[in-house]
Amino acid sequence: MATTIAHGALMQAAFFLGPNQMELREAPVPVPGPGEVLLRVNACAVCGTDLRILGGGKTRGVYPPRVLGHEIAAHIVSFGEGAEAAVGLPVGQRVVFPPGITCGACRFCVIGMENHCKRREAFGYRYDGGFAEYMVVPAHAARRGILMAIPDTLADAEASLAEPLACVVNGQRKSQVGVGDVVVVAGAGPIGLMHVQMSRLAGARSIIVSEPSTTRREQAMAMGATMALDPTHDEVLDVVRSVTGGDGADVAIAAIGVPGLVHDLLRWVRPGGRVNLFAGYAGSGDATISANLIHYGELIVTGTSACTSEDFRVALNLLASGRFDASALVSHQFPLAQVQEAFDVTRRGEGLRVVVTP
Ligand SMILES: [Zn+2]
Ligand SMILES: [Zn+2]
Image 1 (cartoon, rainbow, N blue to C red):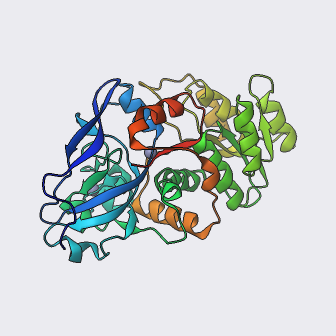
Image 2: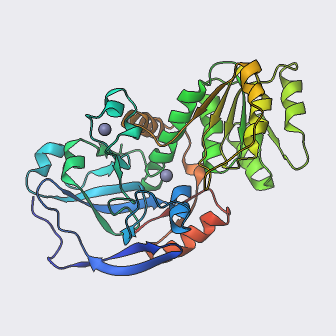
Image 3: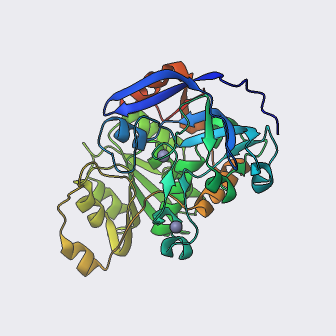
């Protein structure tokens, strides 16, 4: 397929150079080699992980200078030799893809935990990501069929939320939220709000949110929370007990990476209850807990990290169906020239999902 990009054409791309250093530069538009696919980025959302990388809190697997950004909606510009047949989608097709490229052959891929693939590589870490006008999908990723068509009903900015939603789908599976459950969600940032919506879809009877920000508590209520508490004033444990006749919640989800909260979550759930540590913790994430809460309570404590391509497919279909409302989660859109501002707004917690539209 002929490319419409002139040879030697330049593009804008935001390169991560090292801790707290990101620079918008001109760079050559990549030329797709054999098996590769050239994408034009339509939207790329700023993730908490991007902030942690830029801030120097996350370094493993990141190779600067690197274009960050892994929550990407794009369209196909051109194919390298042999890629078109492997991908099976036409030029111009809008696509999303899970950010992790997996091998499909290692033990964890085979047992359905491909997010723990031993050879996992990711866009925005090992390969240049979405805070650029163009990007390339490597041949082995294209061959693995990672590109998924965005249904026409779904806008680019909302489609870029498929990745965080896929992680939330993974967290909901781990938490086994079910019909009639009482769920407590700690933190009502974009991820917490996704857990609120997903818990409602899963049939929870009561969704209690704990969140210090008034604005975010209001957003949580608008998205289906039944109660939004301010942990600086309200005693969450008392409320949970009163809602559950003293038993405790069925599920508690940590959607904010505060190690000191882990002990609280263990106290909020009933015997046999499920606690999911969804958010990542900075540094080593050391937390002090009473192990007896898990022992005597027979609690099920799980973690959630990233997502599988199946989680991604579920998330994309949910977004496309309109059953999950992503539009309310996209609070800001910035052109690529204001990528730094997009990061700053995200860091200050002023918005929900902040999307860069190169
Ligand atoms: Zn992300
Ligand atoms: Zn693997």
